[in-house]
Image 1: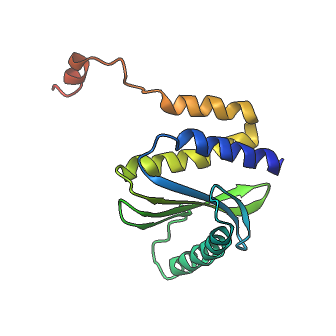
Image 2: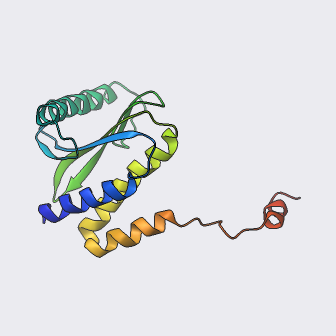
Length: 160
């Protein structure tokens, strides 16, 4: 099953991030820092980043213990709008993983963040719904809900 999940992850990343303006690298890391999957080609860099990911993740979680208002969103964002990293927790078969996106040269960070969250959602749905569900969810994300709305209808929404 894990092999199918990793293949699904590869397909999702290729499909969703094929036409982005940024340079994007993905890692899926076990909570103990062991690399499970990455689209990086440099093997040495993969291992170094996976160990750093685990350390950064648990350091950030420890910082939350000192906060009075703890958010358990399990998402970490670090960097600027044009370059940085995003990480979020992912549970697969009762085990904790960290999904990481390292990006640079980004023109639209909000869109990138949305795509990154959708990758996690598609992986979770593929775990519980099977491979064919991935294609369906991916296609649904590309649909624009207000694509056929007219200017008159928009004006009517805001007229009192």
